[in-house]
Length: 283
Length: 263
Image 1: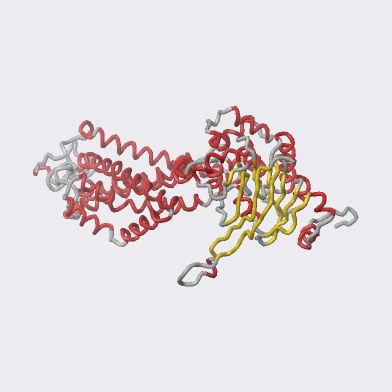
Image 2 (image 1 turned 45 degrees about the vertical axis):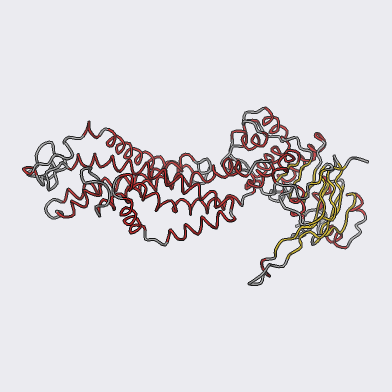
């Protein structure tokens, strides 16, 4: 075919493999953290404070990416930080996706009072500045991993709801929905077996995007010290600590930032790659 | 007298006219169908013809109850279905099928052809009835694994026909089913439909704006203009002796190939 599908597929291949590779590394690091990390993430040693990365003068063997101002190993803390990031990405991402998509499907398909109520709530939600809203929620819910996840779900379900509702509205106008009625399908069956398969590619792309966003939100909350206790290392917390000593030890800030950047980028690219690879209409 | 499958009497449909809605209060009603009455005999092909906006699509969609009538009576096989609820209507759905105008949007883009045909039957894509239906419309059984975008327009419309006949319905509505196709696919789909009408003894309502298409297929024709029936006659009579000026206008609009004229 001369419509560029072959090109899309080749590009999708590289996109999917590169992002998949990084995400696999990320998941492995989180799961195997105690086995693979070179040091203890909480071991402080003031004799070893602000060691530079291994390839610079003055480094110590075994501290590949240097140490922070309390002498804790940066690489080890990045690996342990992946645990928090993974938990937030999976749990907050999936919960946000389920709640937002379900409400979006209902609003877009059934219309009427359900749509009016859901859409008004979304409008109100959108008027809150998200970061301030998150800080406020954490202040009410208290700090801790589950509060952070809950806050992300409470804030971000509207992202799914708006997009899924719009897509469902579009699909509901198609003749195949009338055709399902002629075939004698119930409304619920029409929604689940006819419309959902057509909205699913959008939902998957949004889900992977949301996983990246959840990691960023967690990092922002860590940055303002509202995420989880400082005993557990998080990328956001490391960035916040690194900021204070950026002129003496830039590596404390830069390496967790790189890990964060590639993980969030990979999530978004992975979603897009999946869509291009597995959507029968694009394929 | 052959038995009657549809009895339509004084059928009316009106919708709110939003273009003339006052700022406060209800919109005035716009009459789409203004009291339409006719019968459809079992085993016949009825053509409904009319220009754009004549209400022919609305009439068709009211027969299959995709549109709710606002007044009048609609009897299907002796049963009053004028205001039957969606739930009660579901029991009758397998007997009343429809082929849509746009085969791209009426086939679910993310379901294979096999699943699209099998789902209304409550069967899986491997069901023998799927293969049988595909063969009846002249498509190879392997097409069951294809997606709609992998088919040509004519092939898609054949799938639409296969989906309708797989149900073994008592009645099929075909709404402008060839108007989106190129001329050669049109001829092929019409030929297929003619053949199926004979083979399966289908009762069909065929909606079109094109009288030349109607002439090949239908035994009786209803001419619709602005929601009213202006003529209801056997096809031969209508073409021989059109009674109404509007019918003559439609007849005159048929391009007649003239071999003596060269371009």
